[in-house]
Image (cartoon, rainbow, N blue to C red; front, side):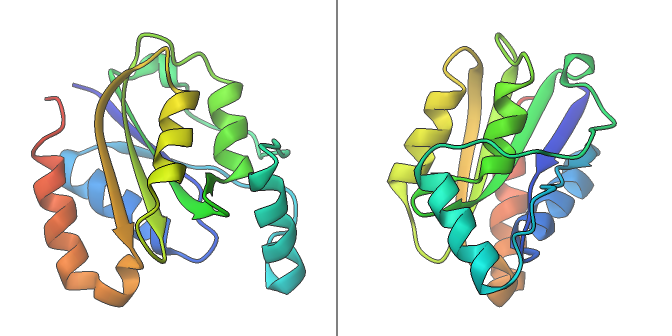
Length: 156
């Protein structure tokens, strides 16, 4: 099965998970780049506001097409109990209907609301797995074990 891990990462937590998943299952990766400045306190606050309001953002051009993959794994940090604007934009601008999709989220604490919002955006897809990790870079070894175990549950 040909797999693609698509992710947005502001602080590196989501990137760490994406790269760990890709290494475990032999997947390609696609980092989504938000062209709006999201660093620093102002970027953090505007990002949270945009996420809460369900806004999209301008993202950099992607190199890989999801239509070329059997399984798409999408990763996003949780901002204000929501997926990031960059991931919302990616999902809204790519036809993922009928695709096998797995999602992973990173957060300071478990956030069911963000998980449900992300799943709702993918209602025309076949959800094949979900994972939420709290601050994975702060618990790297434990997170790697959790990610590896989760990868075993994904479609092959």
